[in-house]
Image 1 (cartoon, rainbow over the protein chains, first blue to last red):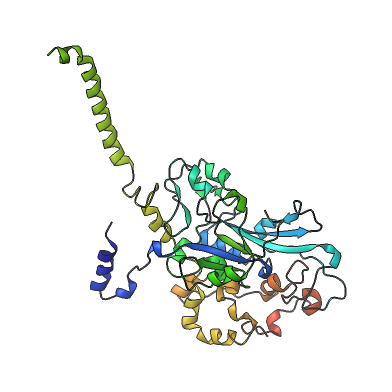
Image 2: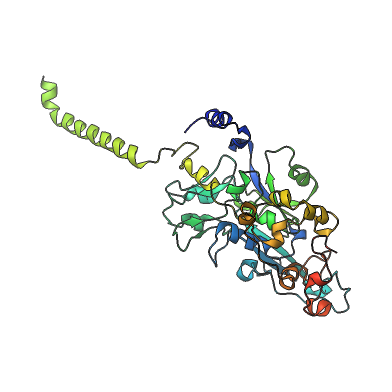
Amino acid sequence: MLPAAAIAWKYVLAGTPEDSPNYTKTDHWWSMLIDIPKCIGCGNCVRACAAENDVPDGHFRTWVERYHVTDYHLANPEVISPDGGKEGFPAVPKSAGGEEGFSAAPEDAGKYFFVPKLCNHCEDSPCTQVCPVGATFVTPDGVVLVDQTYCLGCAYCVQACPYGCRYIHPEKKVADKCTLCYHRITKGLTTACCEACPTGTRQLVDLKDPNDPIHTFLKTHSVQVLKPQMATGAKVFYNELDGSVR
Amino acid sequence: MSLSKDAGHLFRFAYLFVIAFAVFLVIRHFVVPKTFGQYGHYRGAAIAEIAARPMHFAGHQKCELCHSDIAEAKKAGKHENVSCEACHGPLANHADDPSIQPTKIDTTVLCIRCHADSAAKPGVFPQIDPVQHSGGVPCETCHQPHNGL
């Protein structure tokens, strides 16, 4: 393994210093912001993720759930996620006589909202703690990854994840999960799901970048993470998360 | 002399342990990957391997290098912040080799995915009843998707 300066020098000698890999892991701490009031449940993110990462059918690195809460009993919301929301969601009829273009649910029908989910890239993740061989880990830039050449496929991590974000790949027989598009974010691009989201619901966030808009957003909005009581250090932030979401 | 004579069985055992430990170290040297422990209790080289995976979405910045006219047109309408591949799909292969042409979009399917009427969607999002609104006529007959009019 060459030191970074030696690698850069090769590019300088070749006359193309701008192509030198200048990504420093410790300069970043990646996470994501999900703005729930913006999500329309189109499923673009689920399809984009499957296309970008060759996710097998019936398994999901990201998916969208639709919640329907009808009364005070927040513990029993109606949650649907047909095929992970890949092809969108069945329409809910709007109240009669509503103005076309801006629909609203009938007043007594309760509230509906969409919750996109993905790996929370926890700082203190339960999945990496249970791995018996060191095949899954948190990178120095805060992304939870799986070394698929090292994974045994024991599925301890699949059980350990409180968010259900992992699965055993049906062909590779090893653990698979969201990589936060590590192959994209290390090259200055955003994730496939963020790229494909038409409403800006999803935003890739770099918590170590002082110019990232997340810092203002967190100070001015009501932001929550999933299952804070699990103390996993989840880093996917949800704006205006409803109490019924688990 | 009596020590080595009396404790000989201990030394024989100690030699055995030293040899076994040496064999363990040799096997470990060949079995444990070189970069294991570089950053933590995992194979450090795995990070670079995952970072080298192929991309399918080129990213709107790359699209706009050639299609700057479309980027300019989008600024006029509500689709300004909708990135190219949100509708056109993953086109990294087209960005690398422009002779690969993307397939034509069926607007009767694509537009409806976002804009079909549903009370579950946020009320501020523009929605239409596909049957009443156009009766199956493709959306681009009347609308300009790039500036959202």
